[in-house]
View: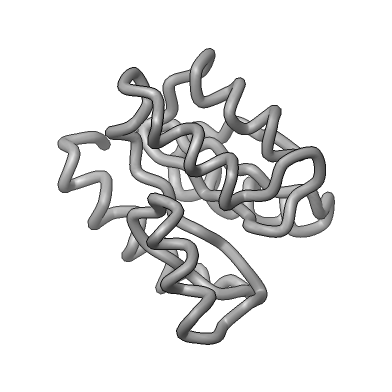
Length: 125
């Protein structure tokens, strides 16, 4: 079972998405701010990170940069989750090191497809 770290500060979004992922067979670990997300990537070694970009303490862009700058965690795929849906927002997420991007509100089937693609690429699941 693949482990996913969900970094999301909105409790309702966090609860809804984590339950839906768990029903799909994923082991879900939660962080509610960017700094905690970076710490949990190091301690929990998830197979994939779902990273909200608008987070307290440090934002998702900076958290992703820190994850990707650490050789121990750089290979862990990160999918940006954001309500910002403009082309430049997608590019900003990719420039920060995200491996993919998905807009909110989350379309679960679309997100699952992206998760499965990245997990298959790294040989997880």
